[in-house]
Image (cartoon, rainbow, N blue to C red):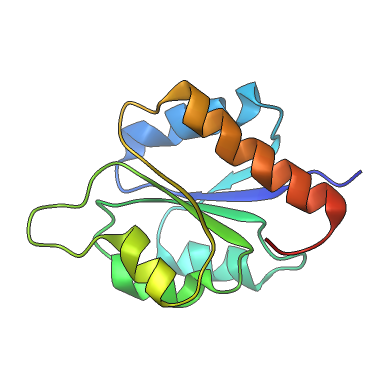
Length: 129
């Protein structure tokens, strides 16, 4: 059984550890935190493709990031959009991306767990959403 490959692209460095630990707590251990868009591009270009890309709404490179997200199976958004900025989850849906969840801070444990279970189930089954 293959472990889901998760990429975390946080807007705030302090959230890196929180998101990584939250993944680990639910049995996801093939997790990588990206430092910037160049690092994200490198990770997204690798095979196998990412099963889940976790993005913070506050990412200043949000719309550019969505263009890159199409190579991952699903996207999960955390936090809240900044005032005057587009809701990245809505934009991702418009682009046809599978938004597995759109969660506020602090992460709601039950909804976080459900989202990660969906990714694990889809990865085990080897098909898209």
